[in-house]
Length: 114
Image (cartoon, rainbow, N blue to C red; front, side):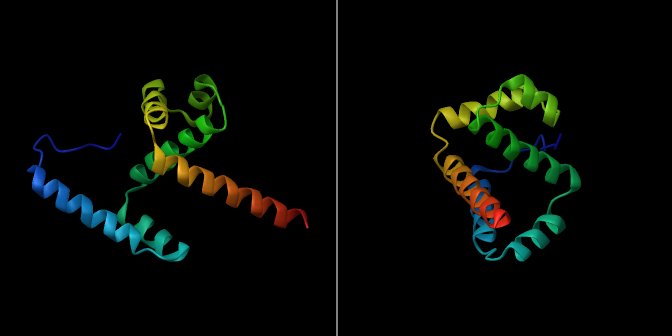
């Protein structure tokens, strides 16, 4: 699991660096740019963790049960519960991107059938 320092940064510093990271993501306008940034910036462990968290959200959205998610992705029940809680308590941004991903997947599937 990814570690975080025991010495937290000041709240103002956190907000500033968080906003900087959001800005960087917003500037990644192509899949290639995003892929290069993703592989250069995040460690393998961080990439796996992020991919699994997205997969958990997707599987929850599609109605998978916790046991199946845990067994397929090898994640803890607390990880699944945390993501489920965020989805249940709003998760507007997450739900929006999940719906866009599902729509894109359906479009790609249709293209492959032609």
